Length: 148
Image 1 (cartoon, rainbow, N blue to C red):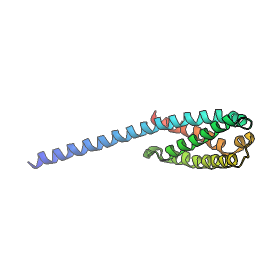
Image 2: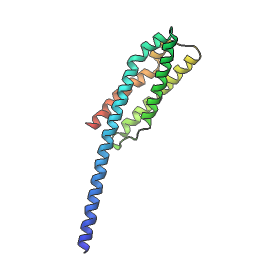
Image 3: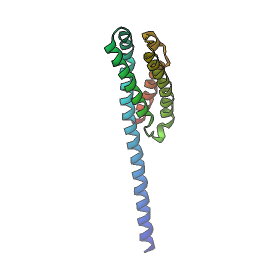
Image 4: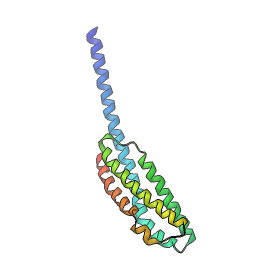
C-alpha cells in the first residue's frame, strides 16, 4: 500500500513539474511573439513618423494624424511594458521597458510642443524617441532568439 501511494505521489510530482516546464516554454514563445509584433509596430512608427511630422508642419489634417500616431504608440508602449516577461528573458524585457521610458518621455515632450504650437519636424528626428525605439528593435531581436 505504501509503495503504491509513494509511486502515485512521484508520478503526480513528475507530471506537475513537466506541465510547469511546458507552461514556461509556452509563455516564452508567446512573449517572443508579442515582442515580435511590438518590434514591427515600432519599426513602422520609426519609418513613417518623421515624414509625417514634416508634413504636419503645414497640413492640419496630417498634424491630427501625427498626434493620433503618437498617442497610439504610447498605448503600444504601455501595453508592452505590462507584459509578463518570461524568466528566461527578464533582463531583456527590462532593457526594453527602460528604452520605452525614454521613448515615452520624448513622445510626451513632442505632444506638449504640438499643443503649444511648436511643431518642428527636426525636433522629432533629434529626440531620444527614435534612438530609444531603434534600440528597442535591437533588443527585441535578442528576445526573438528566445522563442527559436
